[in-house]
Length: 114
Image (cartoon, rainbow, N blue to C red; front, side, top):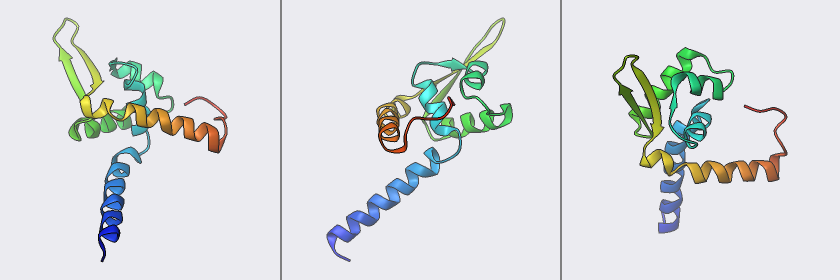
């Protein structure tokens, strides 16, 4: 295997790793929504239309585990929980913005909002 072949293989492995997180349904939308600022669970549920509480909870846990999302609990009363992107998560925002530009140019305008 030549050097360029190895570099391509490593690139494919990196893309595979990225899409193991971003390719999961709802993760991109959650990250994009949090790109606008921190949000409570209820705000995220309303913003990411069609997601169930269970799936949202699971996805937030997974995104926190990967280091893309931080969960902050503020003691109350009432106790509040907010979610925000970490530095790593914020690094995805320009990429998601570019993906949206590409989709509009190449796939047409979306038929409905998310």
